[in-house]
Amino acid sequence: MINLIRNEMLKIIRRRKLLVVALIISVLVGLFTYAQYKEAERTRERIGSQDWRTTVQQQIVDTQNRLGSSGISDEWKTQLKLRIQQQQYYLDHDINPLEPGAPTFMRTFAEHSITLLIPLMVMVIAADLVSSERSSGTVKLLLTRPIKRWKVLMSKYLALLLSISAVIGIFGLVSYLVSGLVFGYQGWDAPVVTGFTALGSELDTAGAQLLPQWQYILMEYSLVWFVAIIVGTIAFMLSVLVKSTPAAMGIMLAALISGLILSNMVSSWESARYFFMINMDLTAYLAGNPPPIEGMTLGFSLSILAVWGIAALVVSFLVFTREDVY
Amino acid sequence: MRKYSVPVMTIFSLFVFILLLAGFGWTLQNQLGEETGKETKTIKPEQPAAKEKQGGKEKHILALGDSLTRGTGDESGKGYTGYLIDQLKKKSKEDIVLHNLGVKGYRSGQLLQQIDQPEVQRQAAAADMILITIGGNDLFQQGQTLKDPSMENVAGLQGKYLANLETVISKLRDVNKDAPIYFIGLYNPFIDMKDAPGTTKAVRDWNYATGNLLDSVPNTVFVPTFDIFQLNVNKYLFSDKFHPNNKGYKLIAERVASLITW
Image (cartoon, rainbow over all chains, first blue to last red):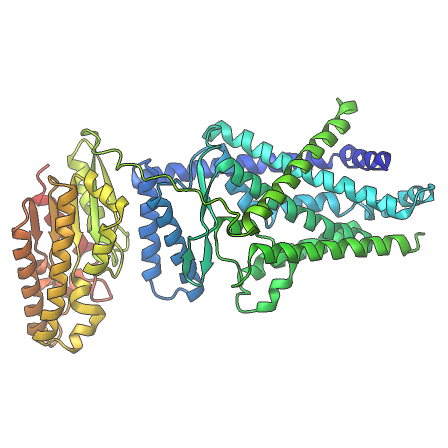
């Protein structure tokens, strides 16, 4: 079994997929670092001060002004109100929400990547794991060996899990190293608040707790990792079911993007919350942002994702062990 | 290199895998665990209002109030505060920093709530000059007052407003004894409507009472704007016929600028 997994890892690494992923992430991190640097510079110019308290206060006032303007939807109003309360909490407790430094960049970058970038990277690896063996015909060589079919598939799946972990590891490492060049490497101990819960338009701070940033980052990356594994598992199932790799990728891509679009407009379609792609923004729960549909919680989203993942895995094994290969 | 890349990558993946698996377990426990199991960490006490005035390096101007401070009606978005800063920057060698905390639609009661926030007090303490516009929404009530411009109604509104304003000014003076406070008076945007004498009288009374109140506070200036708009109400008002346009804001700014001593 170990040998089988090693063989699969060899295939993934020799085909330079991880290298491609690492390159893509490096380029993007470079871009975002520059963008954030520019943004910080502009804020400094506009407000003329580097004191974060002044910046946060100004953001609160700007948001209050936006609240006052007519013609914004109730939903958006609720979000703005929550944001004001959250920022007020930061001010009142003297916590800098945007402590500069590489760890903060790591944190915000992961928050923004969890719904699309990371799933895309995972898809690149997972979508052709089985279907490429089929299209190149090597699947016959693999299956004629005296090894049970489920073992073959299992070794592929475990190699996928390892590669997904590698992608997340590379993601964190690269974003830390590159952004640190500009922002400095400090800030692991900076306090971060988590545990806000949105109750309608009110912010419940009863469960709020203060964590050092490194713990928060560990939590966040483990959630990103979980989402990546579920997306990977679903893409894996597609690569078993669909004979061609581009088709598997296309289906997955459509699902991911529809998830992004849907989460902006499903607030009144309650049953949409059973889709896996609506539940992918797990880090939003940590940060205390309101969920796309009222009533969704971290536990709910995790269970939905887990159900989808297990179902996908069962389907892949059932299909792969029974189908005819020719 | 090629020879080692596979084992190195595998070991790296395995390491991240175990780390994140452990992290995931801990996240579940922390976020979903029983309320009692959660560590209730005491949040560290607030730092004392650090950083007072920075000795003469830059001047801080704090602008408080309603839509006039915000600059509603000015296409460039500057408002009188923006034009004022532009003028001061030309004259002064020092850097001038504006903190504009104006919120559209604010009434005196809301301003009072805003002043109670520690961060606002910190900025007030560090300010070299404070600008205030408030009262327009207290008086006109988004146009409601025009329907019932009776003396009793206006007097009631005015009483509440004066009480709030007095607290606001005294709180500002508590944290900052020296900075001059410029209070921008009201004008009558409805002066060309048929009920002009009534609204004009209400605004005049309002300004008079405000000026009286400010007289008792040292280093506080009431800046009249009534006369600016008196004969040019259509020329200097924005299309909503309530807020000034960029010309109106520029005139208010010029007036304030001429009163500033530094």
